Image 1: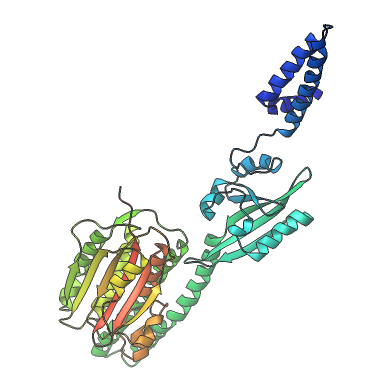
Image 2 (image 1 turned 30 degrees about the horizontal axis):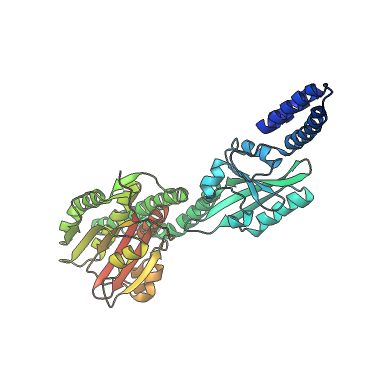
Length: 441
């Protein structure tokens, strides 16, 4: 047992201590002679032995992951990497002495003796850390982080003791997917039950009419059947849009990592819209560079963005009007907002969605402009709300579910981009969505 305890001490002794101990042994052998030098050598041997002992006790090997880690707590630091969730080890003076790779990636920091408050400021979590260190209490804290996409986290805080040293271990579990799913289920049921009530009521009334007064009237029967088809199509579009929006919101907290050619997406949408454009006698202009415009994004969802914006523009453009789709790479957040959303001097402008400011980030945009009636300034902030339609407010119904711009907004939000609207009554409206440019390579 004594030998087992001695091995770690010997392993920690530096090379200088071993040299000193060797000199002390040689001096002890020479001391058996009876010369004057023997006394001097004995004194040197004693001093060397004393110094070697002090060096052996003082010397400890620090953790390779953190040069400032405390000797006792550092032994727990390698265990953090075995955890799948983000985890931190915090000392009694609230300094971070250990963090696993998941925590460093999620919180974007390097644990070099930083205070916990430099990366986390939620009061309930900080209070739980003090309770774990001072009173040895374990506690779970759930909190929400407000950002471009809200995140929900459950933090488990537990005390950790190493001899006389006391610390707290924090493990962070992302609850965003679970809570988002619960909210989406409730929202879907509420929205579906509310919005489907109107077409269902119309269908019920038409069926009653067909079963009664219009039973034997062929002309009325055909007219009511056509009306029923319209209501059925409206219900189908509403359900499709609700399901699409729910799927988008479910993954909204996970930004895409794929690359897509925004110019190619615009050409694809323009080709698909050609029959509708000819039917409406509208001219569609596409302004796009010949070279690919590569962005960080999911191609299918970016196609949905451009498709919805073009469909809205075609719907509101008058016969013989013009719809312009423009693709360009601009610059940072302020530059792209100026280039894509500030062109008409007398127009009203609103940023429906703005990404967080980030250094060294450039964007590409798609701007879809129509020559329709335009939107009054007072309605601009509400564009992008679920089921909001300007024509419902003005009494000029044009169909639609009121979810097109909501889908666009949530897709752009998932891509950590921005959405702008510029509109002037009598001139038209322009919507611009921008997403991050992909790095070359």
